[in-house]
Image (cartoon, rainbow, N blue to C red):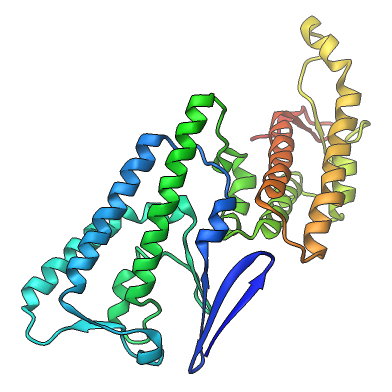
Amino acid sequence: MRATEVVKGVNLRVLSIFGLARLHWNWHRVLVERGMANYSVDYLRRLRDAVEVFADAFDEWMRTQAESDHLTSRGLMPTVWAKDGQDPAVVRRLELKVAEAAGAAARAVAVTGTYMMVAGFGALDPIANWFTMSAPKAMLSPHDIRSTTAGIKGRLSTMIAEAETGSESALPGFAPSQLHPVIWTAAAAHWTTHQYRVAVREAAEALTVHWKTTLGRNDVDDTVFWQQSLAPGTASAEQPKLVWPGNPADKTNKSMRGGLEPLAKALNSLATGLNLTVRNIATHTRDELSEQEGLERLAAYSYLARLLDTCEIDRGEEPAQPASL
């Protein structure tokens, strides 16, 4: 049984074969919306060359294999097996050649985001998992490998053209992986599968959990935590605060600390505002964000995270300590 469904502008091909549900993203329509990552033209060209080497090695190996698909295999059998009369040594040599090429080309899947979504397994890298076709209950077919490889080459060609245009215009690139480590570590797994709303929510949760754990403040709600931790006033062991660094006796710092209270209020407002308008909405709605909307929200959290790293922890009687320790 085959059906096509459009969800939030993403074309999903849904195949159900004797209980085996498969979701295959139409990446040609999805990835055209992706922004430029900060990859050089030379790197993208080398990556495209590696994918072409993989495609050639895969086709050479497939000439020794009998080919099937998920309808024929009923979701239970392999989708490839060696043809009768093939020399096992030759087949093995070609398999190793494909494996080596796959190792060099697999990075292209992450760069282009060209994963296959398989129910029960999540996002799969079709190049790295090509060998699973020979196993029972194969999740991939030769058609999957060929179509995905073609899509990757097309996407890389587009990225190369965009990178060349960007170099000519001298516009800076933007790489999400350069965001604050706390933010990107929490968001990365969801971002690469285009779940932007979930990525923002997880980043917000991670930043709050990081600082609540650092300050030992798991006794309050998130919004109250930010209000108390960044508000001006006297800190205590029970309610430590994050304060902007600087010795008030130092002449250079004296003028800077004159802006401490408004800066603390600004940090307080930024943290509280992000928690209410971004984190809570991302948690309680199912409306997906665009990539641009997700980037802007993650950038705001990354900026806040770096400001907080600059602060010191004031626990009242104890001398203030650098917050990043």
